[in-house]
Length: 188
Image: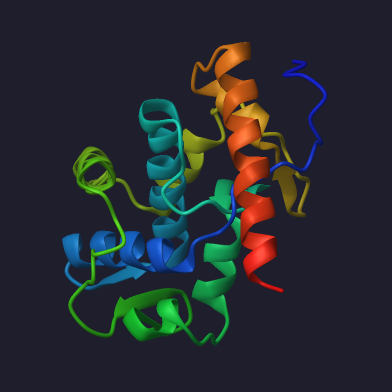
């Protein structure tokens, strides 16, 4: 697919506040604790749905294929390693493979439409554990077997997989580039 002369590494900027709010929502929906691999899969599914419906991501991230299916890379790293900032304020590690809420979720960074998507994903996949989700997600068109590694899934691959047209994909890639440039200018 040629969405124009775009870089193969175009991404929406990562928003840790929104990632933490979305994760906190899903954790709260599940009683406060969850296997972190399941959490990153649910967040990927919500991110994908947001791209399809709202034409923007919930959190933005690097989308990656693992042997167990697609995930949000930075969110996985936040789950696995000690962090500071918005994530750590709401979520902490709970045992070897789980995360839990530290306090009631702060959904302020999320729009009503994003919360609705998270609610829908939580309900739709409530009965599926991380292994069942892994099987399901390895069937997504944007997933390629990373053979034991972590293989980046390009934004345009996800956009095509969710049904965006070439023109919609071009527009969204332009928005991602502009967002990344704006974020870089404020980080200086």
